[in-house]
Length: 383
Image (tube, rainbow, N blue to C red; front, side, top):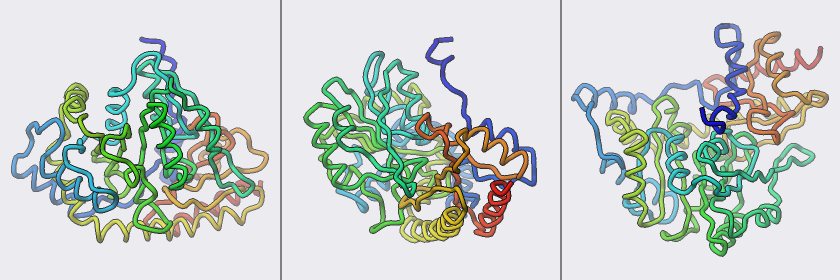
């Protein structure tokens, strides 16, 4: 086993979840997904594709009609994007890995904004690149913010990739338009690629239909790769379907990488993706409205608890909070599961910068479950 693989940390979220998965009394909020099922239109489209016998290989880059639909969908939210900049992948995780393989080799330097979902920083390490971590920092009210000057100073002509996830998992932090412009201008000068994980862009509670995106300000030739997924905005986590928005001229080489990773996304899954895009205009705003109701149930309840520090996020699916006097997030998360039947993700799962914090996924069909969870946390903290 290569040392880089052997040294990869195991998932601390899974470590907590494994302690409670076999218990029916646990209220589980540890994974980053809603407990709502995929819309019937999407499931039906996939089932019909299977009934038609669409069980064969497709083009490496995805079905032409799905790519065209993705180009239209993206163009409706941002600047126009041609179909020759769209590649479909088997999951957003694969989209990220393909982007990393496209850009990184042993010894290359990556600058990453953290804390962040651990896969993003593990993938460069698997490829032999080095990762420099630039931390977000929490303010007094628990809102996380970026020291833009620190990040700009970290990105030099030696930096091959700047990796940014916004809206951010786990903190909910989101880049402002001014920060995006500053980063883009700086990376144009240094020759650095930007890999932007924007899978939560539609899970946005601010102004407009989506969070600020690099696609709003980039030109087709800019060294910017934007990663997307059907998972969050369409309730399709188990379907494993994602896509990349690439600069002009990259598509053929990315097709080769997809061939060597997964060959192609399953056709029946892609048919589900097409159906999701057809209902997007009506479905996504309604879904985000339900997510916002959940957020507005959970976050005030957390903020009202003694010893709890938390801020209401503008984007994403998570309340990220810390409890005074509880510096070990993994130990606290395990205790909450074993003694109180409450399943949360430890902040340490997202890097040292998240230690002492807990992540609570508030995407739930029934806000009453969140109220139950709040009561269990309150009982735990009162002991």
